[in-house]
Length: 233
Length: 390
Image 1: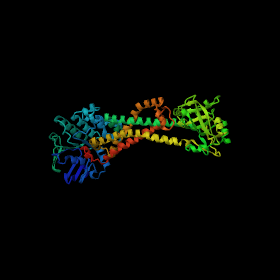
Image 2 (image 1 turned 120 degrees about the vertical axis):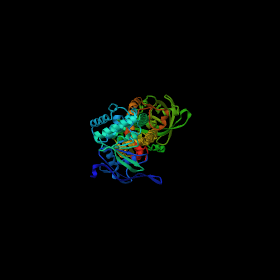
Image 3 (image 1 turned 30 degrees about the vertical axis):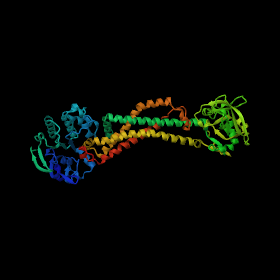
Image 4 (image 1 turned 90 degrees about the horizontal axis):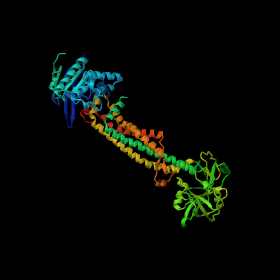
């Protein structure tokens, strides 16, 4: 059944105009992802990892082809519906953490919930649960500037999973971290994947991440070169 | 309630930049309220003094009288009709006889208006009781401006020459019995006030007058043959127009202040939109729509005005209350403004003025805050996350 897939792309093409020429970032990508997968999009810079992640995350639209995410066709989504999809069902983790500097850790994690119709008490519970998952409950009142890189990324993970989304998209989540923090972060995400059955899709070229992946999709020049199942579901 | 909460968090989080804008804007608040209050106080004082000393409850003019044409004064006099006689008897009106005359203070010639008024009147705040005297000499009351321009002082005698009803020149000596200090220059410059009965005798105009001034609050406005009723709306129109032109001139100062404060807000908004693109991208990735983002950034800018109002209240209220109670001293030169002003102006700060100013600053700040945020409407989330502005 087609709908058993969380995400399905068909002949997905993304072309960026570059002055008089153009750059094909994704070239007829056909992929599907199921609930609970832990997938890495790997490949060198410019291979199309981030572009694919952005389209799946409804931050960008395909030039051609189709991307169906959680039953929504990305290419036909209005800006408002795309925003709602991201807010309710998708969590994002960025390479540079993208925490809001004037907010505390608690407020950063709380942010996605503020856009939901939810009581303050319920929000507080969910935020503290998320901070416990990432082991930062004691830093709730700190500002991002007072955190290390690893701690900042854990706050970003807490922010991504606080609303218990079906899908978490992480763009190079360990690129700015040392080895110890990278393993810690990946360990946290593996646990969350098991505990919450959240689907994780990473864009990465970090070798340290590879050992945690259940599935590895190699992209080269915007095409899928290899799609390997590393651990049987 | 989410957007205001976030806007306030962002605004307070911006620290010194926010407070500099807020302080600059609060100066505008206080300056606008102070200047408007000062003008309101001036207007109140001007109206009160002018009504007290010159117009009271309105006037009747003899049909030939035109204060802007001195040539009409020759014929602008008439017997007091019965209607007025009764009002005068009841002390509800006071007649004034006006004639052109000339005086010769310190061997210089000067044209003056000779005004006859009942010494016992209480309708105008002119100290006419000083004209009640047993002396043979004609007593005269002048204003301080007149005293200064002629060099006359209390006790001085001066020759006055006039023409009577038949056009015959006559002359006599008058004695300055009082120099009154008045803020209403229209009852002062070039004028000699003498008892009306004396003047009627001098000019051979028994029971005649040029104008009749009604008591304050008088409802009398009947048609009287050969006399035209002039209500306060008419009498005050020139002075109000003059005041309006002065207050518009004064407004330029606070408009400049407001513009400077708005420039700071506009600059901050532009800077925010360029510097916080990545933050905008993050907010969009977290599910915020562009319209909510525009609301957030606009509100952040507009909240400068809210904080400025609070800061302005902290130092502005005690300051303005102090000025309102002690008054604001005016230099001598303000006499040349052309309307009645005292040495001190007591500003009038009304609730309407404060709410009006707050709303004005809030609306202007919101518009100025909104204008740069329109760029967000075209912003693509992926570009914003890369720190690029579409």
